[in-house]
Structures are given as structure tokens and as C-alpha cells.
Amino acid sequence: MKPKKTILCVDDNEQSLSIRKVLLETRGYRVIACSNGQDALLVFRQGGIDLLLTDLVMPGMDGAKLIEEVKAISPDMPTLLVSGRVRIYERETLADVFLPKGVFAPAELLEQLRLLLIRKRGPKRASQKVSAAAKNAVVA
Image 1 (cartoon, rainbow, N blue to C red):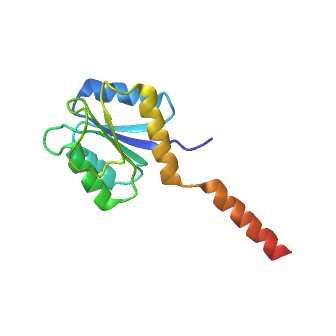
Image 2: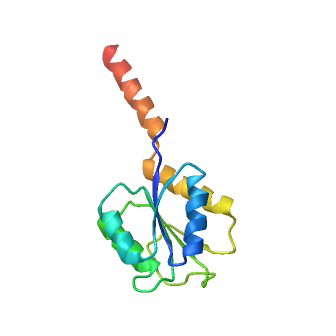
């Protein structure tokens, strides 16, 4: 059985956070939910997070700042930024993907998460073939 990927999900709207958490957990992800950027940053620093999914507009630390802080710690961390108030995000952000709430379907969110996690993992099959070929070359 494959280990579950852990997604840190951040949103100050409890209903949105709950819906996203259920959506992701029913697809086999482990979800750690936080209602603000400060708590999310503390959780992230403890380690074990595979992807950050955050809302943009939150009191205190907004999603763009949270992503900036996370990328300072772990530059390769996949991040996805969502917003209900902004349809096209024009400010510079370090997020890998931006999705406007209400415009994307849950299937699109799941596909973006899957692609980001694959990109983080990297092409394992190719490296396994190379190492197997290298072992055969040494034997021959």
C-alpha cells in the first residue's frame, strides 16, 4: 500500500476548509487543516508535508505570504493558491498554481494536486531503468 501524501490545507472559512478536507481525504490524501497562516507555518516547520493548498485572502498572514515563507524553508514544496475574491491574480506570487474559487471544478483541483505531487516526486521510473541498466553493464 502506498503511503498517503500529506496536504496542508489552509483557509479561514471553516466551511470551505471542511469541504476541501473531506474531498481530499476521500481521495486518499492525509489532510492537516489550519484556519490561518501563522498556525499553518508552525505545522509546516514540523515537517512531513507534501503539498500546501491555501486560500489567498485571510486575516493576518495571507496565502501569498504563507507561500513565500514556506518556499523560503523548502523551495521545492508544491503550492496551490485559491481565492474566492480574486478571479485573476495579478500580483507576483511564488505559488505553483492559482485557481479562482467557484470557477474550477473539484476534479480540476484534484488533477492539479496530482500533477504537482508527481512533479515533486520526479520521474522515478526512468532513474530505476538507468540503475538497472548500469547494474547489467557492470555484470557484463
